[in-house]
Length: 103
Image (cartoon, rainbow, N blue to C red; front, side):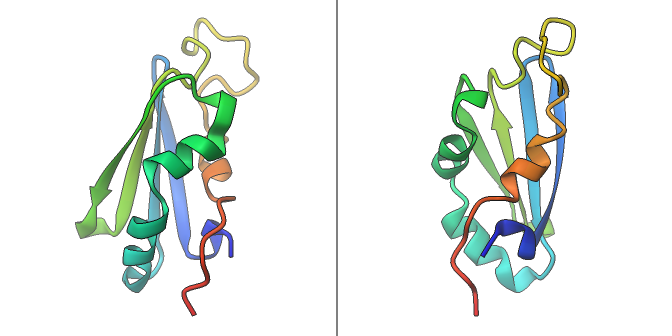
């Protein structure tokens, strides 16, 4: 199943760093998220869009994960020629990751 079936996401930016948060709709799915949505998995999924490291932070009280993607915005809003300089599409891209069906 796709991550979007059990979670929502938001993204933001600061310079050349993108911040992508994923929150499950149902707290019962949080352990699945923690187990399968690793920094390595997100890094591989984003591929060449991210030139640096991906760091994951767990947010158990709100049943979410926060990913910080370094060198992910082509130098930042005022430097990039990318069509999406703020990386807002990253919130949709992360939701396309495949996860095992919790059922």
